[in-house]
Image (cartoon, rainbow, N blue to C red; front, side, top):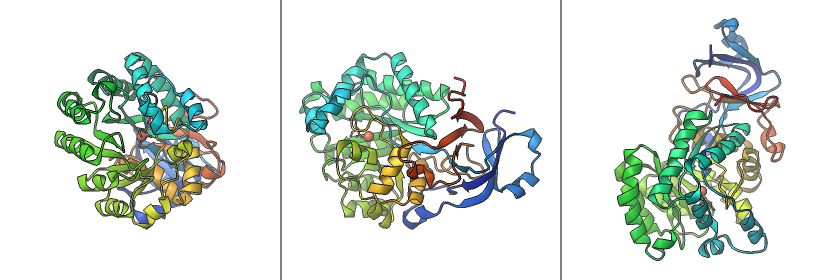
Length: 424
Ligand code: NIG
Ligand code: FE
């Protein structure tokens, strides 16, 4: 029967057990079962434990069986912050930055996000689906089973909706699950230059109601940044979004310390993301309010910025998630092993904390900790099998994926030996 599988003899079954975000010291606890087994029935996990004990209770012949001797098994990774639906590329911009040009300066002269907005407006929904699918395939190969995806390269009604619709379509046909975020306030378009308030009115009055009516997004996000949207403007937009029923996210204190972190705590956002320049006070408030602090070290790496202070953020009691921030400009990578190694070497997370950040805490950052992010009975059967016996190989094999198989809802959807093994 499809979706019925037993994985047995795993040298390490790293369960990351839990149904909510893990804060501070709790992030170190991975709940590992040596010689572990997992049973998945009709796509849902029904038993977890030592191989001997689990196998006694089930008839193996009724299942597909995977022998994971010598391999570590973990929950599928959750990439809780991506901008993966867009038109065009910005390879030129990368070389401009190498030549010393500044990310925000490039954006101000009509490059950066604005360039991707132009290309995305020109792309058809079909084109966005085709390129989006390739990117999802790549993410899947790194062991990612659920992502968050943002709009934000339209900045107008038609294109924002086109991006979100492309994600709806991709979600239906691709094994990677997609949680959608409306990021209409990602930049100020040319026709609203110096009229940011009017642009927010336009988003709130014209675009948000449609996104809600058509159930196109669960979260609302904003780029709260110097010379983009102020704290006051972000507060106004997000407060309206909350009234509309959106859950909140915020790009906070990425390039300048503006106070987006404090705003996330004030509004009860689900996550505050980036935090390169977050204040200690802001971090303490995130911890108090249970807002997930999402770190995106690939972006600091790619922009040659200083990294978020991951060690300090965990020590202050926050729940930390890690994500790629995959996008065409500031961080063009879907590589989980790259993010993982940067997080451990440069933000100060331990390997155990990084695993938690990409699993149960990633799930919490998209409000899915009750369904995914750990190997617990009742959760979706989303697992990865590594080529090696320990999770410690993830950062050790620098930037290279050691994911051998990916299982989504109890079905093998990626196998290194046979790359494309899911049916559209
Ligand atoms: O998270 N900071 C704003 N948005 C993205 C970058 C998007 C882009 O450069 O296209 C980010 O870094
Ligand atoms: Fe982002």
